[in-house]
Length: 368
Image (cartoon, rainbow, N blue to C red; front, side, top):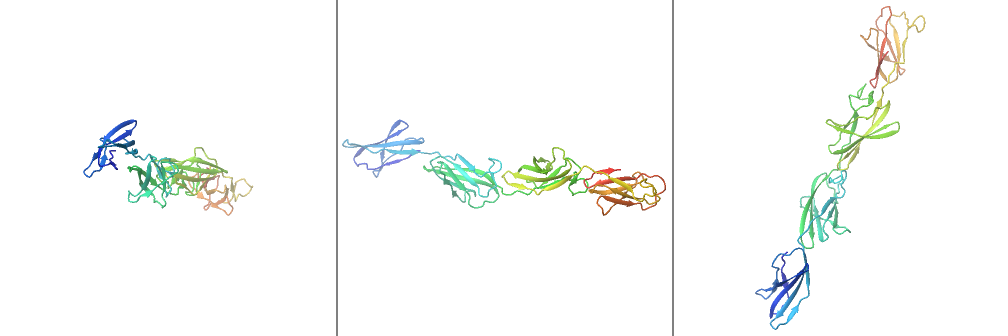
């Protein structure tokens, strides 16, 4: 901002050499100096602000002759900025500078007089040059090679026509991986046989496993009766869970989990089918060795034999004739839903009350 100008073609008999400077509507006259070798130059007495300056040389010799040069306009430019650095393929949450693209793309916005923009992601060891777009002041660069997952600092260096240089940074993250989630029925709600995914709970809780810490959205899709509904999962102290907001009716429900992380990666679980079963019944109890009058439940056999008919999802039938103090397990016959038991020890004469208890796979239980 205090440039020196060399003045050429000045005759040896020149007596006065001045330079007129015009800037912003004002005029200033500078006196040139001659060095020991006879060369003329002029330097402003103070610093110049940024802008255009028009200079004209006036020479007067010993004889009074006067001559003026053609004008010269110079531009003083001491300022440069990088207005914006943008990760173009920022996925997931807008503006978080995270991407799931291993080829990050950047857009740099600078003043129109910038003539070079360079980028580095290795601390300035290697620089690559951005390309100026059709829009003045906008430069683009996409990394051609695969950039591994991790956190990076992008250095951007811009140089303008005046030789000013500035460097700015942008921190960004590449994340291309996301774990595959798993959905399981909570063991407390897996009533009946553990692991059979049958429950008698109408609002069972499901645990969602392998959910990465950077997950920003976790949803559960539930298909039942040909209709699919999607719900947001809940993150608690123990992790992610899902509980239906309303009670489910009996039937099969197929669930799957979808996860999206901050970088925009998505992952989907395998489906899980659970059965809600809240009903159980004992259809019939028969004294098989009923003797005498049919169906009078009288027998002359001291080892009574019973047959119990229940739904086919019943997996346990027990019998008691002492008010539930002692229970005996019936045996499932070759016919689904038919269970048999014959008392192994002699039963004393008299009236007896048979109690039958049935339990199904969902954990439902009934007594008759």
